[in-house]
Amino acid sequence: MDIFVIQGGKRLSGTVRVSGAKNAVLPLMAASLLADGPVEIAGAPRLRDIATFGKVLGHMGAEVERIDAGGDGRETVRIDPRKVELAEAPYDLVKTMRASVLVLGPLAARHGKARISLPGGCAIGARPIDQHLKGLELLGARTTLAEGYVEVDAAQLKGATIYFDMKTVTGTENLMMAATLAKGTTLLKNAAREPEVCDLARALRAMGADIEGEGTDEIAVRGVPSLRGVRHEVIGDRIEASTLLLVGAITGGDVTVAGADPSAMDAVLTKIEESGARISVEGGEVRVRRDGPIRSVNFETSPYPGFPTDVQAQFMAYLCLGDGFGIVRETIFENRFMHVAELRRMGAKIDVSGSTAAVKGVPSLSGAPLMATDLRASASLVLAGLAAKGTTEVLRIYHLDRGYESLEDKLSSLGAQIARVKE
Image (cartoon, rainbow, N blue to C red; front, side, top):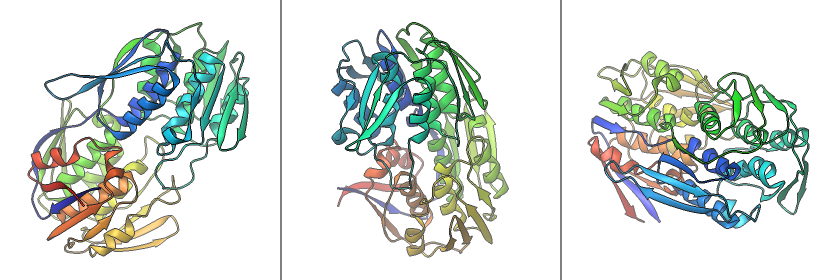
């Protein structure tokens, strides 16, 4: 099993390019099931979740291949869904990832049925799929839960008005895909507004779908008879970009992230600036510099365009070196403070009460052996290790490999002393 060994205390500087967004690629891969021809997703990162999703589609009969773009290492995932016959995703393939639920809508719309195992993924709290099932039922499908599987039967989906009881990114994406081939018009109200939802809508439109309103609380989808294949360039990963900017900030460095969309990271950039670091934007590059103390700030996670829960752990690690008290409130997932115990092992002073953490800054952190518990917690421990005195070992980095492509290489290019070694 691989671990990271980090020699901390280095000021990082330089330019690094962000990878394509995993959370955009996965729904695009699911959307390929709607097409009557090949779908190519350009700029896809090499990540475990994407490989697993490819196996899920391959199990159904799709032909999935990765095409190396050469030069910058960016790849294209090519999916030909024309031989899909088995509308099923078994437990042994989907047990490690939540995104498997995204095949429900496309399979129901294109093949009239679906059977998938209830999904797994990071242990950061309950993420039920009741909104997905409610929406499919409103579109005319019958859904059942039996022996750990969700089964959907839908002879012909029909447009409907669907109001989400809560913001759900995958729920919005799933039902938007299902509605593309439904008869009539579907209105998705209280829809998620994330950039990844917008990217999916743009790709579906290029495939021939009739969609408008993405990026707002209400998305309208008018069903069409069929969708064609497409080549789509995926957006940059705003979560990775935010993480890399915090790498620069926490080490008192000067880091430029290329390929990022600053408008998609406004909440994070604002808080970084409030903390005393300087942010500058030019074209598709975002630069962070910090040479003064870290000012402690407060923040609360919320659905986009609020502060993303996927950056909460990384920003908390940053606040551990702040000049006062910072209050962090997590409103999305009920079990997303698992990194706190590990940060305390490094000397951090953090008190947790329910969904709120009070972070009292300390002058420095000390390297320690650490255990990663989920994807973003892994990133927070790497950040802390980069800023700490001494050696930090991060175990279970397979969590991190689900969402960060070649992170150690990118950090090394900025001057970090980090190595992947066998435990």
